[in-house]
Image (cartoon, rainbow, N blue to C red):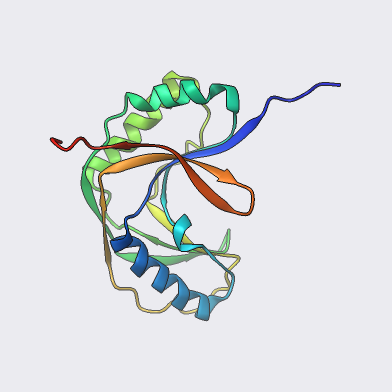
Length: 176
């Protein structure tokens, strides 16, 4: 009998502050009234930068080391649109324009993952936060843009019960 190594379900993300989380959560509630589905918990709202999925727990220190070489950046992202993705039945909020600092963060993070030979979902980066899953197509309520101010990125693991736990965060230095 072979015993498999313990695994962690991991991803890198931008985690919102309360100023961004609160209006996104309110909008998610309004969209839920129109579309049904499964409302994302406010504490779980995030922009995924790189989804690693199941990762051997024994590689966690190497992963943290790879991410330590990535420079956190301070920038604002304007979350200015909402859409329904029919193919996976989600309602999401996203940004029409990707700030240069965000694009550079994603590129640097993915380069560090490549150098460390970590697998991740390499599809093109689309800055979005999932608000509803298993939603029905419907007319979405009007959306007021939200300014999301970022000064850190985080490594997150999925935990039983559908929540997420921040494993580590990398914050812009006070001088940065």
